[in-house]
Image 1: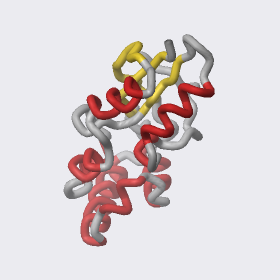
Image 2: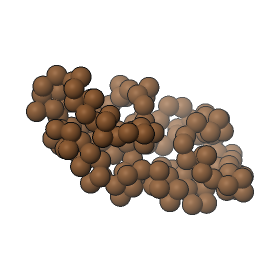
Image 3: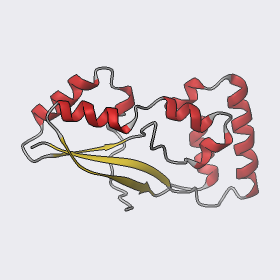
Length: 153
């Protein structure tokens, strides 16, 4: 495991890419030989335990359903000429406190929020509010994430 606070957060999430084989081919086309692509994403069979998702009914299950299994992602890229350089976990340091994190989560910027029922959202936020109320100034936990590194031969 390693920590890299400079990982880009503005790249398009892989699970939102509609035509993944085409995207893998295009990435291979534009990246120089021996170039590397770092794919920081969830895989349905390698999901990290995100602390706040555990407070939502079906949170971890719903989140995993949004992602492909690792072997499918690898097949997409190897079919486009890539090779796997490594697979591991990156831990992103938290930014701020539990209170800060709760306010960001209320914006519902994570894809998973669109898949919760209104009751699940209400229950999840109520549970989170109880946890945060106990110590709103506590540092938010770091987020682990799978990291697949691919290389263009």
